[in-house]
Amino acid sequence: MLLTKRTFLVGLSLVLAPACIAEGVAEEPELSLEANAITASPPFNGDPENGAVYALDVSMWEGPLAQREMDCFWESGVRHIVAGTQVEEVTRQQLAMAVSRGMTVDAYVYLYWDRDIGAQVKEAFRRVQGLPIGRMWLDVEEDPKGLGSTKLLALVKQSFDACAVEGGASVTCGMYTGGGFWKSYMNNTTELASVPLWYAKYDFRTSLASWSTDRFGGFAKPVAKQWAEQALCGVGVDKNTMQVNAKPTVVVNRALPPDDGRAPMAPAGLYPANGAVLGVDYLKMMSASVPRATRYEFALERWDGTTFRPYYTWANADPFFKTYPSFRNSLYRFRARARNAHGVGDWSAWSTFDYGKYTGPRPGAAPAPTTAPTTAPTTPPASPPPTGAVPAGLAPDGVTLSTPAVTLTFAGVTGATRYEIAIESANATGAYVPYVTYATTAASKTWYPAIHKTTYRFRARAEVSGAFSAWSGWSSFKYD
Image 1 (spheres, rainbow, N blue to C red):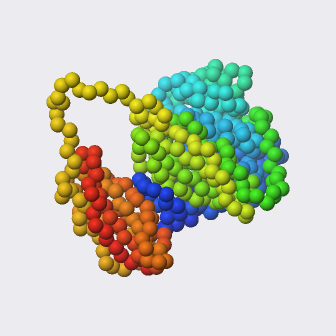
Image 2: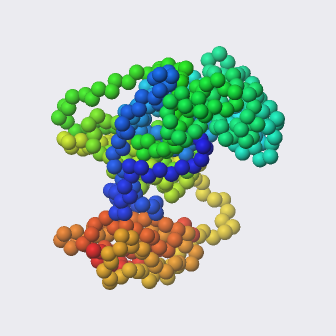
Image 3: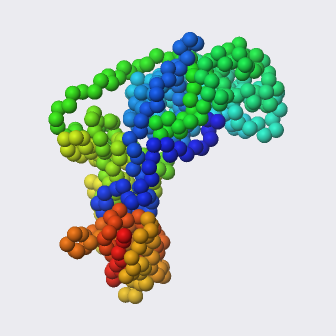
């Protein structure tokens, strides 16, 4: 299935202790993942006897693809990428990255039978406009939910008519389906036997010659076969052997430059790019790979309306990191730097982007003019939170813990819309130093201490009617 949501954790090690370097308020109640460097599989060269290359298809579920991920595909023998057209910002990024790393590309449109077929095809072409796709694949696999083979055949023919109009002379049209679907729902019709066929059969038989036993629908031979749904380079993909009719538009020099004995240059090619607007509900920070770099850091900050506040800095072996910021419709910025055997390089410039639909004041904007009211306000200003609105009953306190996770709790405050929890750790001299501050809407926070054999303390404060209370007293505990 091309549209099935998949979760792959290949190549990832879950680090219960945070893999981040805390720089300020961490408004994100999540675990941090630090990935082992992704590695290529032994190269597979496709099916040269039948003029077919190793191809992967990816959907919206895989999200944006990093340069390192695409290069890992290349090292594994992949030469062609097919991207779904479900989410435009993901589609265009995946295809553009593939092209930039020397791949040829196609796209596919997953057809829904209860929607306007022509409109679906037209929109798919619009989403890939300007990208050098060779084929648009019409994905015929959606459950027809009672539609008979005659009506279904008419809809498939309609999709090909629309595709021919939109593709013109530059893009050919093909069909993706499977033998089970074709025999069950299409009555094994032979009326479309002349169209290019890409079929699915997950048997790990990679040669197009396996059609001799797989055949259906009167097709003389296929253009492509999808033979596995399996992760590659830590990415959930479908694996294919495919004949392609596109030519690479970029040739990549993959030779490793000589070691100049210096710390790495600042990473380039940041994604999200400066000024981008993200519609997806996650953030994948990426940069171009830096030769000989062994570690990357990604520092994220959030705009609070007047200044950028440090959010988190993550470290990763590869030049990307995926996370889920807590605050949608906000303005963020990030930067990256790399480390190699000679030291840590410079930070890149900041890349600022909207996460959702941010409508507040932006950096550098002139302040709104203020005028004195001509009459007294009709409603009194909000009063500060009462003196008693300070969180109490903090726990744990005065105990020794050794569990991987520690849940910090306190009594909730009436009317509170948010809490801040500040954590400090004792250093070698016994003095407390700031560790991290979390923001949360709950009167608790489950946290994974990174430093063992030490003492921690924490305190909390509540936000009521837009103003924070005083901090509570400290609660401390030992962590083994």
